[in-house]
Length: 206
Image 1 (cartoon, helix red, strand yellow):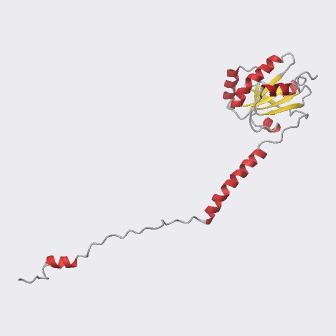
Image 2 (spheres, helix red, strand yellow):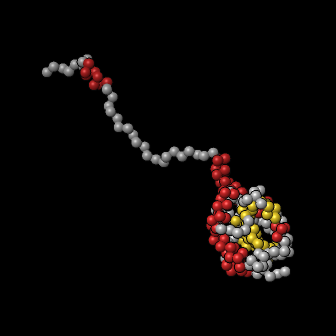
Image 3 (cartoon, rainbow, N blue to C red):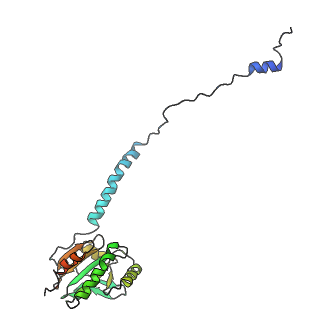
């Protein structure tokens, strides 16, 4: 029997070839990258910062409103047609100063009540002045035309009148007697009962 020659190229290659190995699969927890401490502190403080900004806007965004019984802050604005609107010109008449906006759903709901009040108390000289609150003049004009309003809508461009009355959001209404003093204030939408109660404080008082 012939001896196996180890010097043959095929034999040497077989001896030299390393045995195939199965890759080792290691299981364990995935590596967690630690976040910088400053990042963690910032993330923890962010909700507190946002809360502080919100509180600051609520407290500083609108000044305290005038007290019931005090003189109503006077104003001189221009309506949507550029005509002057002055509260002082309405002295001697009961007045509703209504802050509103075209995007305000509650303003839409209470608008027919204001129209009815003007019609019912025409002989009492009731006047309504709308103050457009943070809205575009085009949108305000379309709203007034659609609702067929019969009173002026004045643009409070700088927001000074809203600040003087302490208004933060529409709708809000002030009921001013014939002497120019605030007899009532309605924060939020007027109901029929609200309007009747507030009108009683300014109608019929000479």
